Image (cartoon, rainbow, N blue to C red; front, top):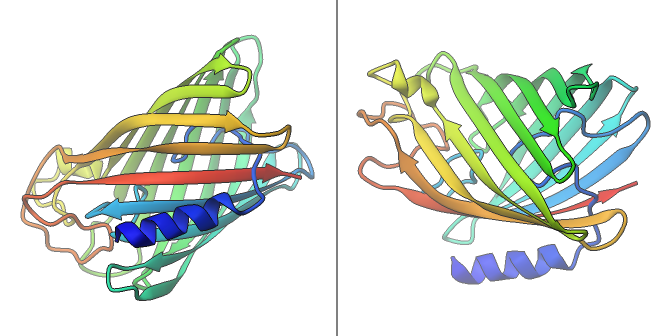
Length: 258
């Protein structure tokens, strides 16, 4: 797996991509693009017993495009491929989201947006999702958070999965931002004693963004994954963590703005 991870990283760095819309790799910024703008994103993640959105167990490659339909609407699409431990390549992961800006920086410097979308997991399961994104910008600080609801269209899974992400970033130098990411998944485990995926999970780790040019940025992030609650898992969801184990995830991201 280490060999696969290194190969994925070399391939990743060799691609020409990325303008950043934020420091976080896991949190969608409330206002990603303006009217008719396009952002192309490529990221590569390595996860060990990891959970989506942290990354599947193996090396994951994803290519995404964000297009500004108008001043208030944007369309985001992502396709992925997964290299498993036995070198098997699994295709088929796809995600589409339409986001609408509800509030743009006024005197409070607060951004708010909401959207709906569709996700097809590597296992072929279809998932409906809704996302709310909130952020605030300061002179050198920015704060962003997402609240996501997922509805798997299959039996044996939770009726609704809850995912939250939070990132705080500080501009250290004109070309460098440093921050911290916190991502929680299956948070319904705090309220449901029989949460299907085995309980609520949390990842907290550092994140960095490097400005390589006016339109190209590199982002690095990741960290350990912990169980916050535990119960006997009954679902075979692809982000399932085996009982008694934790994991970690590392993700590299390049983005290019057109």
